[in-house]
Length: 148
Image 1: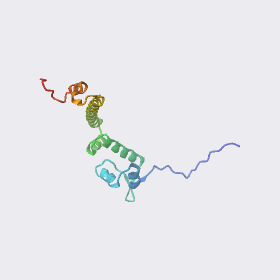
Image 2: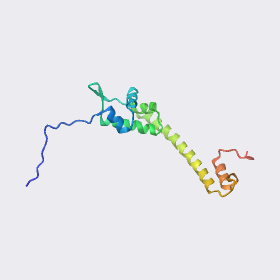
Image 3: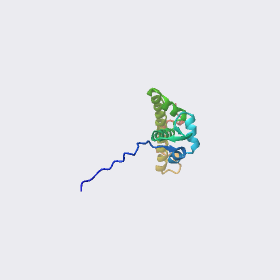
Image 4: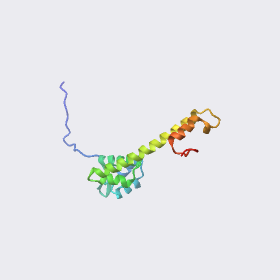
């Protein structure tokens, strides 16, 4: 028997369309959040019969907004990045945020190093521990008595 392929000529190509509640649930958001983002111009869902209808492109935009917020960007910064016709503003915003995160990571690493030096210390008073003192001096955040 020869295999056959059946073609449904009545099938129409149609983009996915989601109601506001579906998108909100998909991303764990309240619907008022999506309305707020719309009022800011961050998203612009189509209207069908007065109802907001979100496409897959809109879902990706929502995901980008969520990830931007997770990265510490404000909604205003995200809006500037999304609406900029020129990539220069987006680049400036992202470089600035990257620098802030790098500084924060360095400070967190220094704090972790200090904690680990105290954990390794066997002195009754860890402030007397040479390793702790070295870590404090290396960090340079504390004025050491006798230093000029």
